Image (cartoon, rainbow, N blue to C red; front, side, top):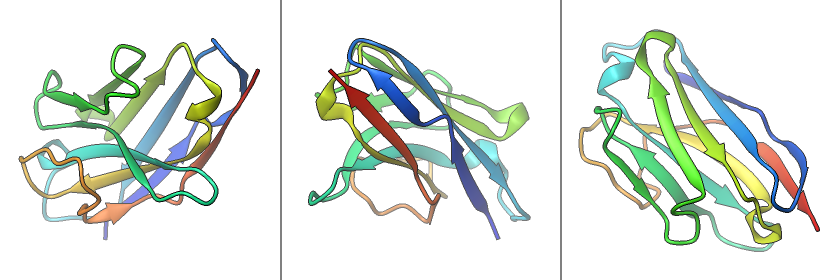
Length: 126
């Protein structure tokens, strides 16, 4: 089975930066390079929302309007890892961030992904 493990969350002041990592491990019949990877977030009392996703190509990225221009998603297939560089963080960015994978080349912004990590907390103070 495929397992996803997020890291890099923490407390940061507004305007600061964080870089999240999602390491993919476990045996699978599909190579990591053939998974579409995404990041979602969920704040207390709110539904999980899409943040960013990246396809099999390192340059094929999609972003939520709220983070476009501030966040960058990338992947390193040699390391089986996907990243989320978060810049110019705002208090409204505070949430638990989840990494997700989907065995498809189609990039989607809805939560119909196949596997999920347990999440990493991002707190933004003013």
